[in-house]
Length: 289
Ligand code: PDD
Image (tube, rainbow, N blue to C red; front, side, top):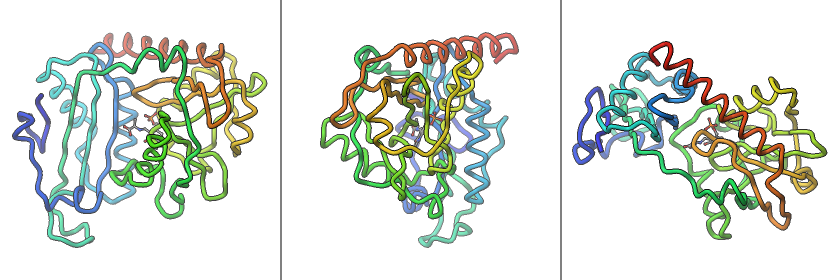
C-alpha cells in the first residue's frame, strides 16, 4: 500500500514519523474517516470542512481543502482503489517534548487508503449488539466533542467494555445520565413510529452520516426528533440503529437485556441513505468528481 506523508506518496514501509511527533506523544492532532464508493469519496468536502473546523478549534495549521482533496484521490489512485476506506490524519508534528504547540513547526499529514472491507452481512440482516458503557462520555466542557481528535482514550475505554462483554458497540451516557453516542457511531431509536436521536447538547460528535440520515428522513416525510434521552427510552423502543461513515445505517438487535427486530423504519432509512449515496456519486461524476 502507498501512503501520503507530508506532500509525497510513499511505500508503506517508508511512511515513518518521528517518535517526537506530538500526535504520538500527546494525541495532539485530528482526523477524519471517509468512505469511497466507485472512486468517489462520499461527502468529501463536508469531511474536509469538519477537519478544518477541528483544526481551527485546536489552533492547528492544516493544509487547505483543495490540497487535501487532491491528495486523497492521488493516494487512492496510487493504490488502484475505488471502494475504499480513507483516513486523513493531521498531527501537530515533530517537536521537542512539552505541551506547547509552538514547539512543532510543521504539522504531519498522513492519508491512509485501503480497500473497503464490508461488514459481515449478518450485522445488517440480524443486527448488532450494544452494551451500556460504565465509562461516561468526556465532558463537553472539558473536551469539545466537535473536535475529532486523536485523543480517543475515552472511547477506547468504552469499546474495551463492549469487547469484554462480546458486544459490537458501547453506548456512552454523558455526565448527566443522558444517552450520548457510541464509541465511533451515533445512535437512533424508533419509538411508536417516532425516530429519535440524542441532540448535540448531549455532547456528541455530530456525525456526517447522522446529518445525512436526518436530512433524507426529513425529505421523505420522516421527522427525526433530536433531544435528551435516557436508557429507558431506548429500552422502550421498537427499533434501534447506529450510524457512521463506514457502517452507514446499522441495525441493533440487542441493547443490554432488551432485544429488537431489524424493523421497517431502520431498513427504509438505510435504503434512503444508500439512494442518497448513489445520487451524490452521479452528481460528482457529472462534475468530474
Ligand atoms: N467515527 N461519534 C464518534 C465518537 C465517532 O468517532 C464517529 C465517527 C461518529 C460518526 O461520525 P460520522 O458519521 O461522521 O462517521 C460519531 C469514525 C468512523 C472513526 O472514528 O473512524
